[in-house]
Length: 227
Image (cartoon, rainbow, N blue to C red):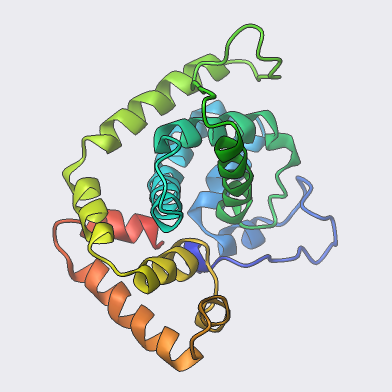
């Protein structure tokens, strides 16, 4: 099952995502969910891999949203930083029987809306003493690791190639990449949002996905974003 199309998988015990959810359910949801569950269970060592695995898709999502809104009122890295602050503060509320990508994208949507409303606000991966955030032991180190990963990704040639690719897309193609590639909507759902036929959405998404995966300059990154 791919990350971009992860759907909720209910545990047969009906536990609603508590820690006794079966391992095979987690495995069905993918490696990202395995890492998220480990961190939620108290394993800080799983955070760097989780952060690095999901961050390319998060940055791509933010950049696509900013482009679709036709605005640069906020900085993509500011949004990303605040998303992870909120995710770490609320990690105990993550339901490990459901898609981690969908969960953190939900946080990202709320964060971006609030960033638009507070366009002059500044966020940092290093929580300030008076921020009021409840953090786990070792979290400052996690923030440092996250900063390093974001910095490295920003300098990555494949990510730059991906963003150049995005800039060359038309509005409908960007929306299909956002909805089908990152947010995990079906082509029919994307078509309804775009007010086009399902057949048209399906064909255009198939061609767009092939272009992404066949581009050698960004192949590995595209795989991570569309996982």
